[in-house]
Length: 184
Length: 184
Image (cartoon, rainbow over all chains, first blue to last red; front, side, top):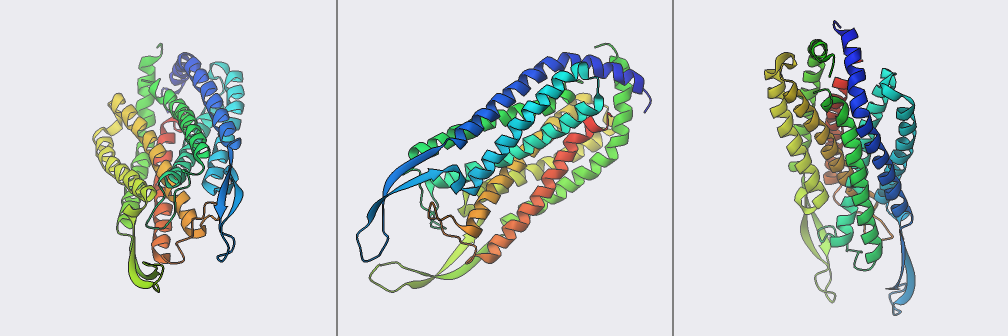
């Protein structure tokens, strides 16, 4: 606990130099998670597929729709991105209001929440990617057939939103790293 | 950059007080990721299942085995845990050798790698959980049948290892938070 007063001046000088980079990253994180949320939520594809309703009758052509809320992993992915972009917006306002890092407890709260967003976003990306791989390749061992040969546009749009979300989660990851790296 | 010398003494005092907690957490992270790796790698279940080989013949009873390398998500989960426990072991030695946080660049390197482990582990947990949910519940929209009614023991052991891995990833998350929180 010695050197506490000197530490405070150091922290203030430090946060001034890293504040700009932090703000840019936070704006990036906001834009990317908003984009991933929109791209996922608006993803929808309807295809006419031959379906066997009765075994004795020939298959009937029925329209089938692929939507984000049909797969719990994609739903989870959407929720993680929605939470992250809401948090990015709030934390952006708080960081801008807390100019020069005056309130240290607020800065630490934001750091902790940034780290939680990294964990949240990466778990969502993992979940959506795992289901995406199954959609593209299927799995013969558990007899899950690939579905992306039918719903190609839906799968492609999901891949794009996973990529955008990954960039957003990297922005949060760098936001977590800045306060420690900038102290070097 | 003013206050840099004072900062150094502060950092040393700080790292002394948080070093013990950090070491305990790192040992925990090591034990938990090793356990998750072993529980996943040794997971195997063989069941005799009636399979239709030819449509004209009655189903034949054949032994079917569930193993971690049959599902890419479980393979990825295993790899993330293996990387994390190898890293936890190396970083434990480095942290112990760097007593009192003498080398600041080493501490920052370890902090950055800790943060990467959080991202890696959470993506693996997300992937394995997404496939786990499909295994337990199936999905009628994409016609993927649940498989955990057949391979109950395999699914149960996977659930346990995901839980252990989650605890391990939380240990890494706290390791990331310590240097910033302890500066308060």
